[in-house]
Length: 392
Image (cartoon, rainbow, N blue to C red; front, top):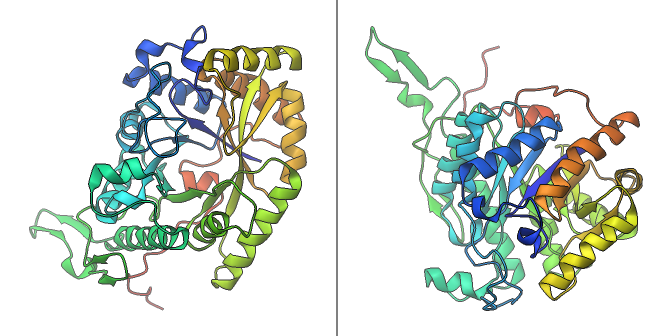
């Protein structure tokens, strides 16, 4: 079983910053994030995702709700991951990037740089924004877009990023002081991408990343398979990613989402390529279920609303959560991305409670098996698409 943790401020619950130990005064410091990732690495988790967006966090769908009792801002996810990278050794680092409003050339360089800084542990979580308030920051077009268009654009975005990562051959850098040749220009390639949304010539100005292709992931929107947003998001996962995050509340819904994505991947001719599917789950973990329920209830009172979201919310013990994960895994999942309800409490509960429970059951690692994120997930390092075939 693979496990990831989503890092988002003081935790998933909007009142998490008010809990004892939450350290709200440190939320925008490098130390805070470094310590959170170090805790996740101590628990042998596969990777962490750094959540991000171009809007203040809000309960309103179309912009700020004006509330002042919630953490509204975020640090830049890619820059935070780059700052944390030298302080960690084995865990994967996967920042969120909003494809709707960013240029793929910039994203390819940023994530390739993160892969160099982390020595092969970088990934990318592709986010599609349908938030009008985010669109108004850029003023280039009206948002929201039709779902099919928004996700088709994101797929093109990923395709450009992937081609730019391949635009340098692995051995393009010669670094020969005697001859004065640093680069073999014949091993840098114009990608010449021409699509409906992007026209990018390339090559990148950053060499091919250590992993060749850093991990690409994306989340499915909430909703039943077959709905407009659900099908579009599932199509993006099927065609463009290595890991997809599924929002569901029971085994049946997960099984339907997995089946839809697998069908779409087969239809795209990618059925033989590995694809990991993780379920998203918000967790409140305590020594017993009543304590977890009470803690969530106390936070709900502070927030003035029940903690909800795209993902299901679990309250209970590590053993009960392990039971649930093993049950949900039968739907065809590779693993889970857990959202700590309160980072200060629930992240250590995951690493020091849930992980040992899963290890006792023989379903989770006892040591890291690889030095790269692709290696941890059993994904091969792909050969560059523009490189000359090896000599026979």
